[in-house]
Amino acid sequence: MKLATTSHDHHPLHSDHPDESTKTDGITVQGLTKSYGKHRVLQGLDLRLESGKVYGLLGANGVGKTTLMSVILNHTFRSSGQVRIDGQNPAENARVLERTCFIHEDQRWHDEYTARHLLQALPAFYPRWSAQTAQHLLDRFSVPRKTPLKKLSRGQRSALAISISLASRADYTFLDEPYLGLDPSSRNIFYEELMLAVSEHPRLVLMSTHLIDEAANLMEDVILMRWGRIDLHAPVEDVTASMTAVRGMDTAVDEFTAGYDVVSSQSLGRIKSVLVRGSVVGREQQRAEDLHLSVESPGLQEIVAALGVLDAEQNTPEHVENKGDLS
Ligand SMILES: Nc1ncnc2c1ncn2[C@@H]1O[C@H](COP(=O)(O)OP(=O)(O)OP(=O)(O)O)[C@@H](O)[C@H]1O
Image 1: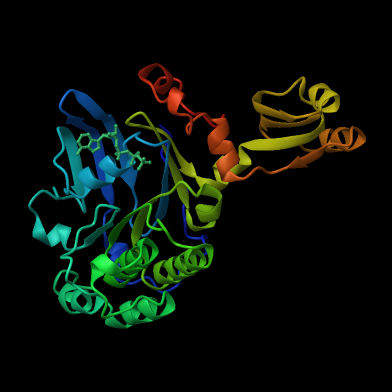
Image 2 (image 1 turned 45 degrees about the vertical axis):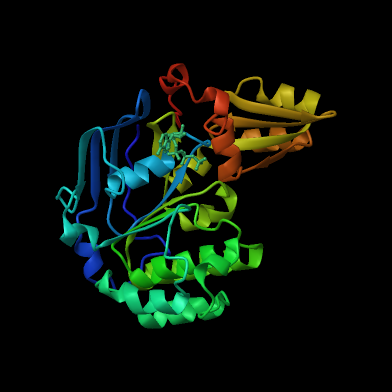
């Protein structure tokens, strides 16, 4: 595992007016395991999350992303290991837990409740709750206030959950695939509002997503999970700078990449697309041009896929030892 150590002062998400939330100590996880019966889902996992930073949690279905979030925030009991939020054990610790917000698919509200009921009840649970933000977001997403929650569409329920999470201003906000059912324009509203919320009131956001490229601009660090462990933890910009995409006619691509460390390769007819480690600079750029090749920085999703993190068949104990390494 590579822990991110770079400063995030320069990131556009960070305002010049940090509020009290930046004084929090973040989250530390050591040797965390979680088993369901004989099925060990978290395999002794270590993780350090800094306050005020936005993290993307990525990985194939079933590798344990939801379980990890749920165990850290004490919604699910851990089997062993240690979790510290602001240096404290969150288990049965109301003062810590009131500063957390966890949005996930299995969220259950009373069926007869409406958004209006929630707006009345939730301030009691979140000390930094912003009624103004909640109203603004529900307006932007056009979530009806008086409709029983059971009658809301999937997308409307997601929009409501997102509105609650951002209005909570919780220092530790976990979003587990928050956009289920949201149409593209509502997803854009979510990305915009998340950016704004975090820049105005910094908080730690851990968000799992399968829409990697769409959400890449929001994330400062990316955390890749494979089979219950952290495979890679690094700043997004380091990950995207770690590889180069070379595309063109197959013979030219093969000739050009002969001396490179090829991570992945795909062909469509005679057009070949290859990801190589490192960058293509100086004379090499000219050589690529002479061979009529395009050389560009790949998207985060392409890199994550190339590392094999998204392949279900690679999420086995044997592959976990084969860590995704940027070098
Ligand atoms: N309550 C539970 N009881 C038994 N097994 C569970 C329970 N919750 C999760 N699991 C199992 O734990 C593993 C990890 O599930 P988890 O939901 O954490 O994965 P995930 O990475 O969030 O997947 P996805 O991307 O599909 O949401 C899966 O094999 C799942 O079947």
